Image (spheres, one colour):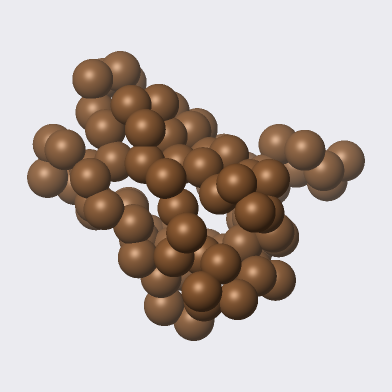
Amino acid sequence: MNSSVKAMRVHFDSDSMWVDLSDGRILAVPLAWFPRLLHSTPEQREQVRISSRGLHWEALDEDVSIAGLLAGQGDQTSSHKTFAA
């Protein structure tokens, strides 16, 4: 996994979070992987801060690493972990 890959843009549809990466890839991730985002409002989702390591939503207390997304990992805070097959 290339640690120099960064998020450039984040947007949402009704079921997914889409992350445009600096290497040209676009990731589509189910919102179900991140319950805080799934249950947030569209306005709250738009309040994302993109950093060199990932995505952060201050009001939702949510952090998503790009490395985790590339590894197929969802929310790591719950007792029921969700991973890509």
